[in-house]
Length: 306
Image (cartoon, rainbow, N blue to C red; front, top):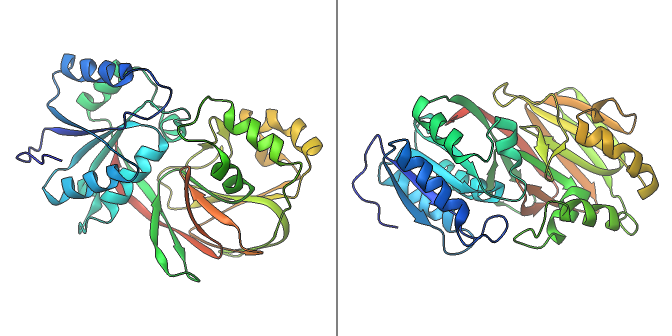
């Protein structure tokens, strides 16, 4: 990355050219035009490989940059978040993060109310409409793996099992749902123990969501009451379900009514510990991480977000 001379008014735009459907770069060119038309000062860098956005973001913060725009999907945002949160800043609220969603799912952008129209995104940057956003953290005490940060939704169990099997880049918007439904025929739910503030759940669960925002899996409204800045994680424990049991619940899931379903237990907590037998994989923002046991926590209002 060419760090250039830091400029408080200049945005560093981190572009993932592999994000979303192949379009020959048309998505980024539309964003670029909108930024120029709005009179915004910016410098763009394209990522070259997985993990590159994290490195770019960390080096940019070290160089004094404080405004970053992600052009990509949820995975791109998560990589940039890792770079920001591990850059050693005394106050991460100094950094402003924005997103121009060009991925397949764009679930975090959906929770923010950010659409795909580049002109609207440019206008939001000019207007400076921001909030202080909670940032989630995941620790893996058994493996000693480094802390991983997330901004949207994490999951353990079947959610991560499906995420691991979705090809990258995601071919279409329905790919996640197709793989999720097909896999239910052979998936075996583990025994879970979820411990949180005054709550404990034990039993055979299909999955557990730990949500900072509302959507994941491309429009699945898994946590309709989640707030981006309340200092609490929304936890959803979903009991073991067969394919025939899941199908009638899809309308509730996409329609934001899943919390009223008897198969779902929902509560809020600042810290959540998930243990399973056997161990299962954990994902966050669509990125595969470690395995249970895992401890989820929040750093409240830790990042300025457009």
